[in-house]
Length: 116
Length: 113
Image (tube, rainbow over all chains, first blue to last red; front, side, top):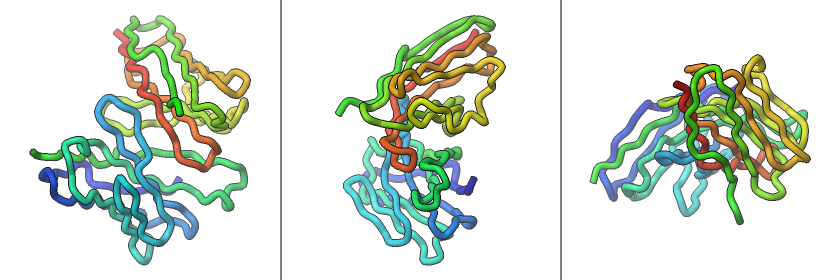
């Protein structure tokens, strides 16, 4: 299984941007980069994913390095509700799958604290 | 759209007792996952179903854990007998297909005393 490494914890002030890094030096050419987050006492929820180009949605932005060995999840204005554990995960592209599924493996993630 | 439903929300048992968790995935989702999350760690995949069939159970302690998915819809995860180290949150997730994003339930928090 492809691996990712993330800092154990980060802090941010409320209403400031947050940049959550993820290293994935062994990424294969067609692996997608996915981000999930887990709020306290809840199951993880999908945030965003991308392949090569930067991606934006209503929750966050994903910036992917040109060599794809790292990526950054960007929360443009952190709120108290963004305090959560953020997981960076690599997933195989559908067309690469010998079967029609892949395993979704979570690491320990980054625990984000937001300071009022 | 209704989310992934899990029950019970909490369960306290003594070691060596048995326990069962239930999961109802989002309608139409072919893939169902059970994860175990120990406090302070990321979720650990226990078993993955594609419709009725098991596609991965490499991390499932098969001497005490079992799981089934009835008619490709609901699923139950059972532990018999429970050990102290089984204390964790058990999360169920589903996805429309095996390579699409996962939707998680709120989990069942198990305490084994």
